[in-house]
Length: 330
Ligand code: TMP
Ligand code: MG
Image (cartoon, rainbow, N blue to C red):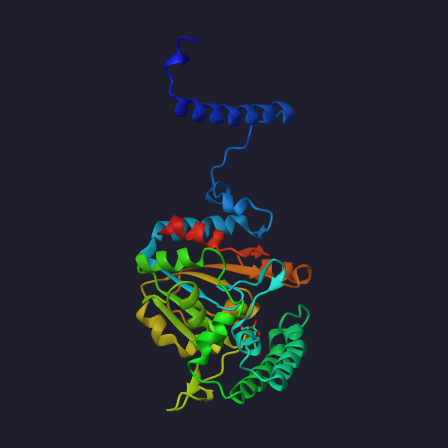
């Protein structure tokens, strides 16, 4: 008693908590008859990776990758990420959040007749996009049709450049929790981030500006709108990017990757099988950690996602896992 009387309250609380933990560990040991397992690996020590919605098919490979990324550090790192349903949130309180295209579709600026066309297109083609039984090659012609028809319908709405701000503000498009920290931190550590999106470049930039900030280390490859001198939308610029031709877009952007050729380690984030090809143009790639968000059609697709992505995050509306990994590297 005499020894404890001199402790301050904080120390007592901390020690009490530690004792409670030790007590729980001892109880576990006595009940199971086994020594509590010592966590020695990085993937075991990261609490974010212990959650039930985190699926890792090959923990040994992920452990090795993490060790390599951490050892090489931030000067060797670059991030390549999808936007819709990867940086942007899939749902909130059970309700789907808007993709870039949905921002326009749902806007009060779009006449009912065009809304109906865009809704019908989505109902026809989205099930194909996420179909677990079709191959990417089989899906490509349908994706071309979807994007081409949707772009024509959007152009026919007579949008003006200044309408976009309002359309985004009125929408429920938002970023995953933790994106703001991630953007800010990657910028602070000068780690380049390529946002590779089959959405609409102007809209995704506006979503990022309204919910976080566009930083100088970010580069966007996407479908950008073409406005005439009066600020009226007249078409889309450049080659069309859809969900399953990002490999071609990646190769077209090989100049960007060449300027970053010392950054041989990649963290790739996506929510579709098409996103796995976003790093195709990276020369001398050394290590790539692929993190996949599986948002929809989960049971049918989980096995395929686990084969393709190193870490699969099921129904996770946060950036907790990528951020925890980045924290270790930066
Ligand atoms: P991405 O996330 O692979 O870049 O793809 C963009 C998403 O946009 C894709 O999941 C389908 C969606 N989309 C719509 O919601 N409405 C549309 O009209 C089109 C063409 C695409
Ligand atoms: Mg996506």
